[in-house]
Image 1 (tube, rainbow, N blue to C red):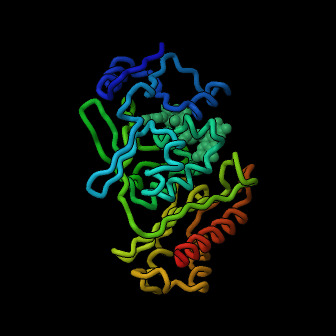
Image 2 (cartoon, helix red, strand yellow; image 1 turned 30 degrees about the vertical axis):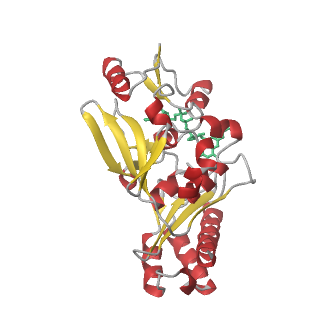
Length: 280
Ligand SMILES: Cc1cc2nc3c(=O)[nH]c(=O)nc-3n(C[C@H](O)[C@H](O)[C@H](O)COP(=O)(O)OP(=O)(O)OC[C@H]3O[C@@H](n4cnc5c(N)ncnc54)[C@H](O)[C@@H]3O)c2cc1C
């Protein structure tokens, strides 16, 4: 059975009536699992016809992105100008075909530590909006992922949107893989500079069971520099910041990379992101 509701309330009701229905957004993770026999749904709830989930808006300094908006719409245009790090991350996801279908809701739903949008959501302290049988709940993204491919979503719940603050400072995303395109990351990171509250926020992907905020390195940096101005960040500080981010990573060795290489790679990209911030 395939359900294709046109409203969020209808979708939530379908999940109440058919608790085994599995949520399908762009299908770029879902269908791989079906093809490999790791998932055999008896019924599928497609989100594609719910227009509200496929749009974005900006109001009072908050950008709200529908969970089923495809990456292709984040790569360029007005949304890319508002959220350059998300645009950079979106451009690295798979191929144009994958970016035409894949979504933030699906990246969150899968909750892989290698999900490219996730370090951006963590560095921007995103809020996840979730439709439930009784209404809506909001969750800080830091509480959403609870382990590799595990999250805090309960049965019957649907991610409807992600809310992010519109920020004015530098933001950047960087990813290391075995080649430049069509690649799952070996290490990734997002850095966001907020000159107003004098902070730099740094989130790392693929170097731990969940996305990791480099909180100690962020704190050290705030004590070393005046973060009201990126120009106080020297090359030596960038190198030390990268080293400290590497110390906070928790990489493992698997078929894609060794733990040592992942730690080295994340140190290099976090240091470079801070250099780019200083030069911005
Ligand atoms: C060839 C290829 C290359 C890829 N390259 C990359 C890459 O470079 N970087 C990267 O990060 N990913 C990559 N992926 C993985 C995938 O494209 C992303 O994870 C994408 O964001 C998934 O989004 P989707 O809309 O297709 O999700 P789907 O496949 O539809 O769903 C994924 C999971 O999330 C659940 N889900 C989806 N939407 C919701 C929702 N709104 N509420 C609750 N649960 C939901 C589904 O039930 C399912 O469990 C690649 C995949 C392929 C096939």
